[in-house]
Length: 224
Image (cartoon, rainbow, N blue to C red; front, side, top):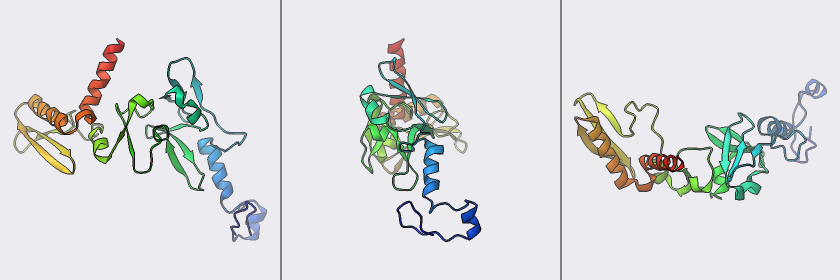
């Protein structure tokens, strides 16, 4: 059978499956259903889902359709994002795109920053739902890695600081530009943390995770 979607695709199916509706298209109908059920981006379909927005603040506040989580943006970007249905996936605010027949994600922060393929966008404070421009910055594979969150298997609470059972001391190290830098072993935990933070200032600068945390603390103090 040739599908009537206009693609010219043909489907081989037994008569019974055609009669009972098991086979109804070349696959285009499944894609359309996915748009409606998973994303709401049904391109004009009457059942399209829409995000709700709070218009009372100086910056935009929206709510995802899959878990009602808040996300933030600048009002100047409202016309850019309002045409999409936004959901939360892995902490990011995304919309699904089936424009080429395959499912892919468009992340709000990349859309807002007009990021080209290969360009990385860094969330300054690791708040992936906050896509105001002042919270975003252009990055590359190195600087984006500098600003990573503390790994889940970290037990010291400080990136790059761990207990070395063999020496009975705290070990500090830092990975930068494809190389591991060993900063030493210390009797006191505080000395290991200090060595790590000084190395971050030297290698990472404004992209260090520590600086992102301090920036957030300073902002909270100003608000208080």
